[in-house]
Amino acid sequence: MRIVVYILFVPSLMVFIAADTSSISHTQSLTYGDTIVSYPQGTFELGFFNLGKPNKTYLGIRYKNIPLRNVVWVANVGKPINDSSAILKLNSSGNLVLTHNNIVVWSTDSPKAAQNPVAELLDSGNLVIRDENSTKSNQEEYLWQSFDYPSDTMLPGMKIGWDLKRNRNRNLISWKSNDDPTPGDLSWGIAVHPYPEIITMKGTKKYQRVGPWNGLRFSGMPEMSPNPIYHYEFFSNKEEVYYTWTLQQSSLITRAVLNQTTLQRIHYIWSDIDASWVIYSALPADECDYYGVCGANSYCRTSASPMCECLQGFNPKSPEKWNSKDWSQGCVLKQPQSCKGNYTDEFDKYEGMKVPETTHTWLDENIDLAECKSKCLKNCSCMAYTNSNISGEGSGCVLWFGELFDIVMLPTGGQDLYIRIPASELGKDYYNHEEKHGRNKMVMIIIATTIAVAGAILLFSIFVIYRVRRNIAGKLFTHVLSVLKINHAILLYIYISLEIEI
Image (cartoon, rainbow, N blue to C red; front, side, top):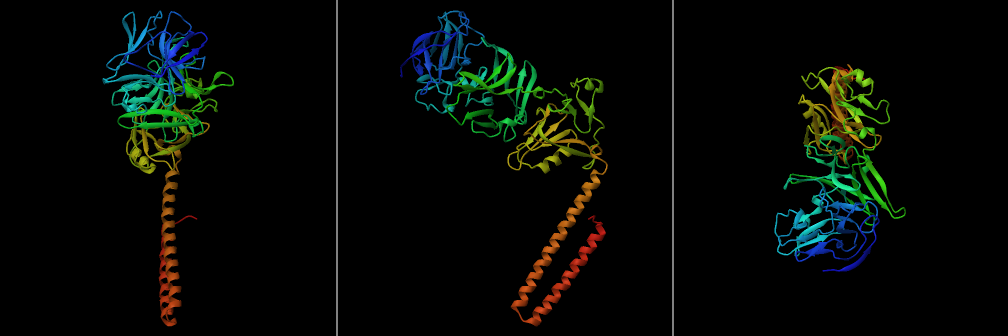
């Protein structure tokens, strides 16, 4: 056991002198005034504290050397202890148990028993229970970890999302207020749709959406482009769906907090110069960030006035309300889709978009954009498509069915989105142009092939002239020219019969 003596002065919190350790075993306990300090850097500590209310004591994790808004995790949320007589123990089965007056206030739920259990606070801010003989860095060997039960704060290395094997949702939940860690009504996590995405919920209603992961970033967050500070990662398979980020500069102190007071998810960086938390980013960031502000089948653009506009081929469902800036009813098709063949519906391309909500989607990561379009055309309910991964030249396919919600035209970044509408909405000459373009392209291929073949024959003929006797070469060359004349005749016939426009 490592024992170090610290003196901690924290304004508005308990002031104490403690004998601190990096871990506790099942023979030890933690009482008011004791702390567990993360090893080796001592960034975090686990202990009892209050938030300015002496009669409400909590067990939690906080930054050790930051005095402001330093709590990152609370065990007994919603169950404060009214005095300093609480005790935390690690029992022989490998579970932490917090008691007050011999009544269990909080405990862990490790499904496995350990022969030599130990609870340890890591420098990542993760409190873990493991067998003393297991590897410290192997998360698969942890019997329990606080990162699986986030509070209102996301730290580097923490996974937000679903552990599908254990049906566990790791999402942020706001505090009721800055001095009350009772759960508020904001939550921030991953919705496991066919095309997963991160959504902020306010109670049972969708409040804000960053969009799905498109291979580079979340669709609605162009600021997540590669940078020297953060490395972002999204992972999805049959066992896990999660988002995480790590620091490329380990000296930085940073956290993301779901704040009930501002109704935002705020990303902070600690500034030693100012001795304060500096806002790196916040969501919602503008009016278009609020979920579905423009209703169905429309898109939002903050630089426009009004900021909501129906998609091409759609009209406001209620023109009166729309003109009075009540966009909640959204837009509807001007005319129904016929769905009678490949040339009755088409797709209007929008660039720089945050793609629609993904509740009703279909995903195939192994087909290209052309096949994606074809699949959408064959299904009358399909209303939009795009690449599921926009990195490189783009790959994969995602289809949207039914009404399209929460589309945003972004000032930078974004991605292409193809919206299905009747072909007549793109102009009466659209398909004539497309067919003529296709015919011209085919003929140009024939012309290029013919010229290439003729050129090869001519070069071969010249080679023969230099290699064989003049009279034989002359005959061969004459024969080649006659072949070329035939090819030119064929080419002229194709040109006339297809009436190529030049």
